[in-house]
Length: 102
Image (cartoon, rainbow, N blue to C red):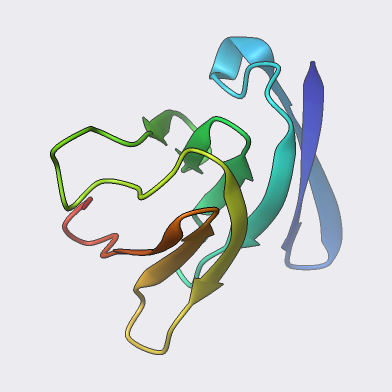
């Protein structure tokens, strides 16, 4: 699977191809959000992916860990004025503080 992320830097648009080798896999992307730091967050049917333009981190629910995602199916993403990322899943909300990577 190949997905594209469009970045506007200065005058000319820039399209970067993100393949499954970069970790996006074949799960369906349900939502995308670019935060104030330029990090791209992709909600999928099997978790949340954080992509900084070089590498990614995948977030999935961890049984018994109250700080992990409440469900793997991501419905929506929202960044609040403090820079926290709110992740809406099929089982409720999870707040991620990107500065703490939690």
